[in-house]
Image (cartoon, rainbow, N blue to C red):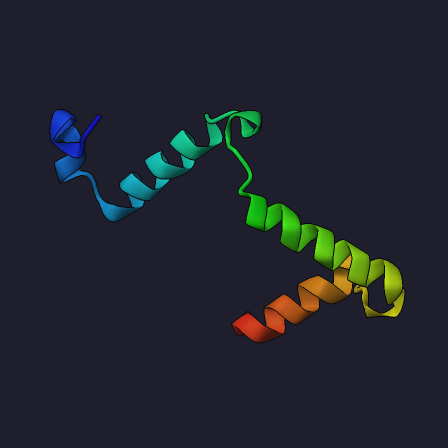
Amino acid sequence: MHLAEIPQLNSASPEQKLALIDELWASIPPASLPTPAAHLTELDKRLADLRAHPEKALSPEAARARIRALSGL
């Protein structure tokens, strides 16, 4: 499917297009999206590091605060 096949989208606003993208993304079952091997390797590495150094872990609240601070929110 291509954008040219859906002429209404050409006149849609950026906000409408983003909303459609969100809706399309949400309609994809997570199990149908393959996880790249490199991502799994990185997750294993990070989990091993966390187990070796649990003091590095942030609470959800601390993680949110850090994200807000870094993003200027």
